[in-house]
Image (cartoon, rainbow, N blue to C red; front, side, top):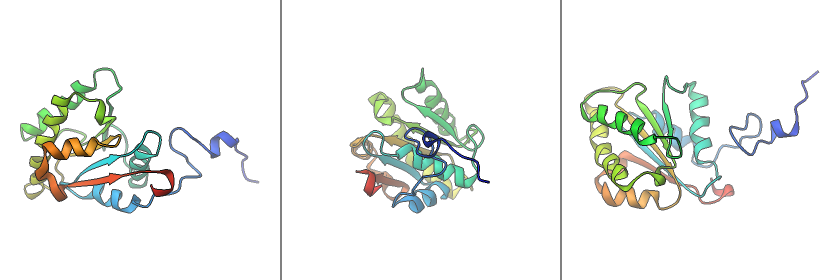
Length: 172
């Protein structure tokens, strides 16, 4: 006999849904970009639409563990800029931080100077794919217009940045 579940366990509206997750249209592309060395990601869209969830579902499929395969920082955390600066400072010294993938959620809430600094470093990190098999990677998650600001300051990222705009639940 199957174990019964509470309705709130099956139809989760917060966190990762273990039973009812429907992969969004760009799920395969997001996964491919996460797996591709030297490719960074920008995922933007309204709050609560599933931007962070898609990233964590890809990590779940890949068997990735927090603090082993990726670091997660929310701009809403206490002192997020310290963790973010440590990651990118290490990268600028030519080192590979461990873990080598950083997810920055609520990217739009970071100070403009920190966002500008990140944009400036991303292209160099992509170029490291010519030099090493698994260069550091950034996954940036934010509300709409996050990408416009990033690309205005780091216009030379081009195809080195997988950019996804989720606009509504039925289009994700």
